[in-house]
Image: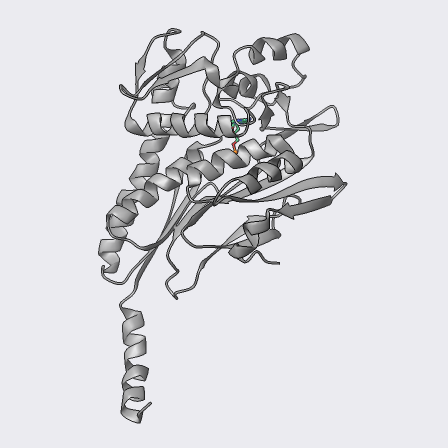
Length: 340
Ligand code: AMP
Ligand code: MG
């Protein structure tokens, strides 16, 4: 290269880098934290900031529609409506219900948003003020389980309405809502022309393009036993990542740990030693729901399912003894440069 050209490059480099706007905003939604990072080479920092703030509103809207903890949400209204009474839904709520029902079919009912009565019975729902001091009876489990099953929700695609078929049916979108919120934020960013961004809601993450320094977005997956340690890092480009863990929302009773992931088949918190499942997929709502379902299915059935799916990878961790875990990833997970 001629010396003059080299000189221009040396001078232009920092100037070009100076044209990159980078914004990182932290907020709270759905009872958890959220983070949005966006990079733009055409917008000013102020413009980008405005776009990110607007995008964050999409997550807040999703919360207002889907939360079981808000009595006015569409889901709370659906859960209160008379059996068989059609309830009109926003396109967003309808979309989440349909995605959730699809994952339920795919996982053979391991993921099921009608687990609401069981989630409540085991002390993890909005009506449970404190941690239970005794385990529910077999009769109580059987009674709650009678209302669990995706056939209890009927949706109509034309009118975007839904109903529950019995009084005791309760929909709980806790296993998919955060991933959906992340997708919704990204959708707004993309509509505004952003090509490089990362959105994270309660650990459920979706990323497009590259970072400010043109590197892939690097996402850490927490170690199930040591909060400050990483199980792995994942390079996330144009993909979503969601993690379910037995360590998030858990209590001890009679010397045993009970986690918030319920096996709809037994009506009880999972007892399969699976401690975390991370799913990488195109869409974050899907990754979120599938991660919850795979916690129930376990590594053997779960990895078989993942290997049969296009564009889906997973990392399973399960407990093999006190402080000991085993980890297994699907064959294609390596493309995301898992480390260590
Ligand atoms: P996540 O952290 O995404 O795995 O979601 C866990 C939440 O999903 C729980 O707190 C419950 O509200 C709900 N949930 C628990 N078990 C299931 C299940 N088998 N299928 C669908 N949702 C579930
Ligand atoms: Mg989930």
